[in-house]
Each structure stands twice: as C-alpha cells, then as structure tokens.
Image 1 (cartoon, helix red, strand yellow):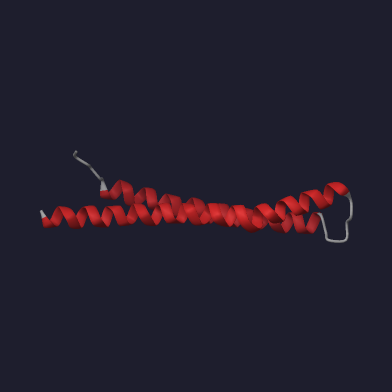
Image 2 (tube, rainbow, N blue to C red; image 1 turned 180 degrees about the horizontal axis):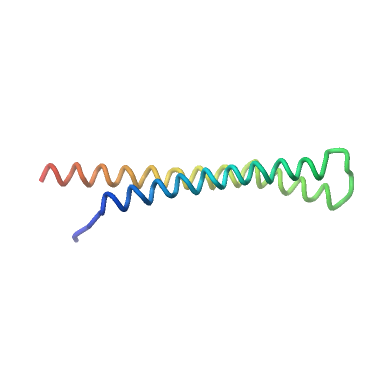
Length: 91
C-alpha cells in the first residue's frame, strides 16, 4: 500500500484546525458571558433554571472535550507529517 502525505497541505490543515478551535473557544466564551449576564443567578423560573443548567453542563464538559479532541487531531496530523518525512529520509 502506498501512502502519500502532502506535508504542506497537511500542516496547513492542522493550522486551520487550530484557528477554528481558537475562534470557537472565543465565541463560546462570549456566549457564556451573555448567558450569565442575561440570565443571572437570581432569576428563578423553570426555563431560566433549565437553560442555565443545560448550558453549564454543555459549556463545562462537552465543549472542552470537543475542543481537546480537535486540538489532538491537529497535533496528530502534524506528527504524521513529521514521521512520514522522517521515514522518507531514512529510505
């Protein structure tokens, strides 16, 4: 089996993943601030409790986990390029 890795393209893809993650993290921080500002802790309605509880679970666990997985994908892509180039030089 032949495997072709285009180092420039793969590295660019990894950089784009990093940029997307950074943008998404910034936007999620803004959304978090907006939710906390617009639905303060003192508001006690069923909908506000539900929105805040769901958001806190999502923002506190799901989002960081997804962002970490995306960062790992970028790191793995870079590592694949490095290893492929190293293997190619050994041949």
